[in-house]
Length: 331
Image 1 (cartoon, rainbow, N blue to C red):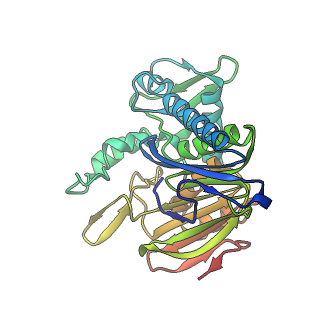
Image 2 (cartoon, rainbow, N blue to C red):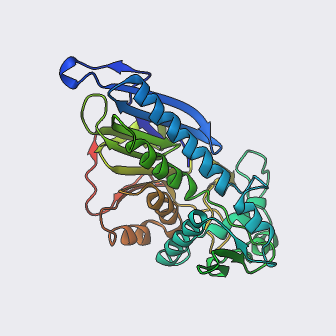
Image 3 (spheres, rainbow, N blue to C red):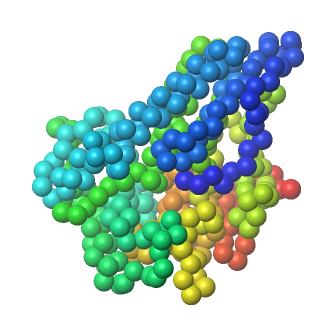
């Protein structure tokens, strides 16, 4: 996901007053999984904070090696290579991630689908596209998309893509999962009082920040990334924002977001940004994409049915829509 959350975080480290037990906050920014990550740890000592950050980084790198579809040696690449040929036995962790992805696909009636990856060859959002792909190209790629053609065998712990040319990818769930895992590792380490992991907009925070308060997160205005629409105080929650203003193509005055509707094979339109708030970064990651695809009415209808999950949508007309119980503080 995209770096579209503005955060009030501690840059570097800061020693707090003696009455705060001399808590220290450390932060590191680096590129992981092809995007910008920020990891912050609040601890009793500087060494404890850095140990937690380094452990979180190692965990994210491990997950990247597991789920990357670009690394030809990864289990995900092996699944894709054997599409239409053979089931592939995988680690339980990857199997379970794919199983959960299928559950989200079922929940969203196919608006979320990790087999969308065949579209990567058709739509490019790196500035290289000069014209729309033909309908024939889109339809050919779309014919490879169907989450129900991902066959899971729990007994043998195998994954099989039924049709040749099918591909799975974790671009809409992987960074949320990595943020979850890094949080789990870091929060269980000695001396850690709180922390935050931000995977380019897939953010999860726990405990207290350097001021011994809940974490303050600003929601970026998609019209101006230097401005904020409002802010939230969070603790033990994730905030995931997806927008169409970082990666997109524009043809004949219409902006097409990098998020593909797996049901049509075409990029989504009509929404500028979606922010999901909930207890789990992985699920919030998947749901942010799903709401983009479902659209405002159906997207909010889905979110309002889910416990402890809230949503904010900014439409192409700059209308702000929210789920029933979102407590957003506006400027």
